[in-house]
Image (cartoon, rainbow, N blue to C red; front, side, top):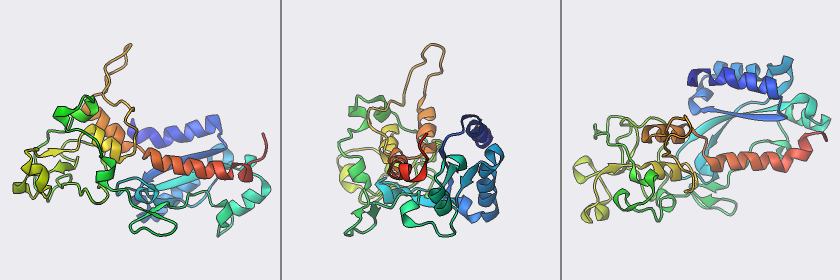
Length: 266
């Protein structure tokens, strides 16, 4: 189960012994210094201390092109025996030289600059998506029917089309934000309301777009060969628990760029 994932991951690392592994956790972990350092040391102890786990770093997904306010802590572990001596020295240095830094540089910022693009907005991410009743995509047809509970509760706000979306959560029972609210509940998308579009929460496909999943990724699936079907509730959890694919891409590309600098030839 989810509570055992950390232990399970340590066992897999010990069994497979990859050259590098990546782990992710919520931003709040950075405020629990002892817990964060314990996890770093625990991962490093795999295979009798065979892994180098540098200080975990918080990354904001919006700074890598994800149209969402999502901050997560990333742990990177390197197999010591596979590292070149220069790489081992650099990665254990109190200040890692920029050319050896395993974390990607941000590509986006709240304000455009010479070396940064502006944040991707919610409206840009949701472009060309039909309303649920007009869509042929099962993931766009499905959305949480949880009633509005007041803005003092979590998941009761309307997304801002000209900004980044709030964090996409893994639970859908009243926690999935609204695509639009009616005026009585403080809705601001007046043109859409005037056109007769109803108050509703984000669809599964809209959540997937805001997490940067491609549209050909199917989330609503029937049972096949004894495997359980994937329901709308399951899909919300899968999407909300995921690392945004675009953030994962940037992490992977940084490792690819430095791969030969880090590792000995097999």
